[in-house]
Image 1 (cartoon, rainbow, N blue to C red):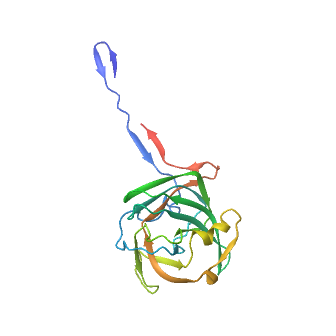
Image 2 (image 1 turned 90 degrees about the vertical axis):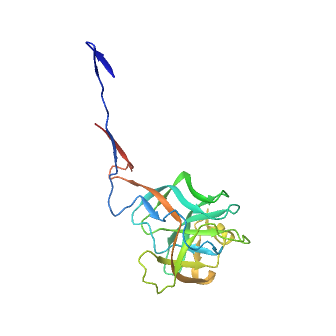
Image 3 (image 1 turned 30 degrees about the vertical axis):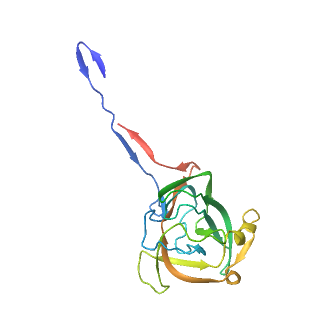
Length: 205
């Protein structure tokens, strides 16, 4: 507010936030990060192969819904090498916490390539999974469910490849296929053609 000749003028700034991005590169991959029907979740690994990252980008954080308080979960970024083999690009820990919605900020942030996908896994011996899901058979025609590999693997199986880039044979580990979605999403940012990250742009008028 400014004073001039005993008159008062109020200047109001209108702030608007817009997102500038390719519509094919959403800011949220996976999810939704809210409670889902299945709350009795096994601790075998799930590779969310039917929800790949559509663009090269940067994961800023993971948003997820937790149903069990005292168990650690791991989220990995996986990359296909061929029809049978995958390798793990990064691993993030979802530390034990109270049930409900959570956001885990990543430091360092995780760079992904188009075609990479998320996986959820646990330490062997954990009694329950922490992220609820909604699951149907592999033949389900529900458009809100996506191809998912249920792999008989745990943190100890993936650990050797975390730092080495070693590949894992899915057929050797053993897996089955269903269609599912999980209460987990990657919160994204994308590089522009100039190499700078795409993020919300604030306009003041």
